[in-house]
Length: 131
Image (cartoon, rainbow, N blue to C red):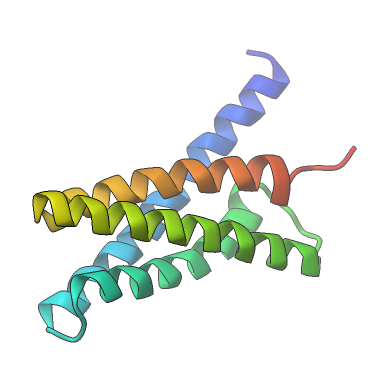
């Protein structure tokens, strides 16, 4: 396996590990808010997504893409990316929930869309290694 291919494979592997942790955090808070009847499912999804995103930023920067430098532009671009992902996540979640009334399915579909968006944006824009 070529060096580039190996590095890309490892980044995807680590991104999936961090993603599983982030989604677990998202999922835990989502169902906790619903189970405790603290918030309705739509608001629960939005808040749980933000909590998972905060974890994801630090884990992806340090563990996945191994970026040591701290730049304000990374925070700003990450915030913009996750805001975009947040909107997509919320829209997909709400639409699937409206059509199916299945909270787990709506959670999974929304998570898939935001995962693809987030990896692409982080790898090729935010944490792109400059040569």
